[in-house]
Image 1: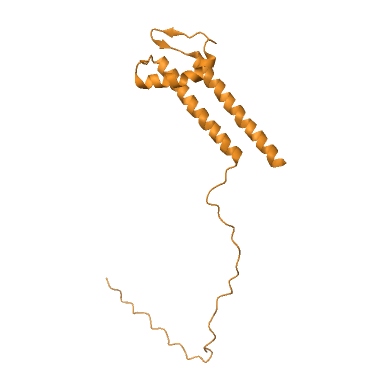
Image 2: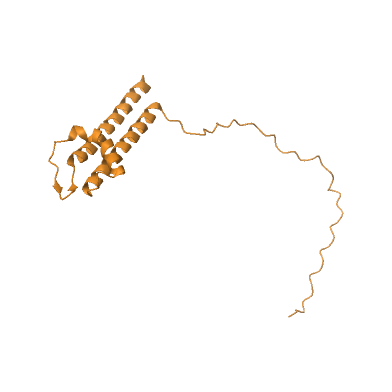
Length: 144
């Protein structure tokens, strides 16, 4: 529906003003140079931190090998299978120092190789000790 209201009256024209006179152009304020700190593209890693990372990487590989060995022994995996043979051969070096500490309980073909579990714990402690020594020596060098 259309309303019967009349449109608003037009705005009165602006009176000519003598106060409006051209002025000088407005210039932006002078920019001051503020030095910016350079952004590092990568965080820096000290030699000690890198050595700790490598130690934990080696530990992770050895631990994965030993855990795989324990699981394969528990599940009575066929030692003639290629993968199983590779795991047993590679991990035998790490388990050898701990053979004979405990008896190896076995039922049917399944074996709980306690020497592998001891090896996992001992190697984890050795790696932790190495990383702590690296941290101690790196602090001493930083202080001197």
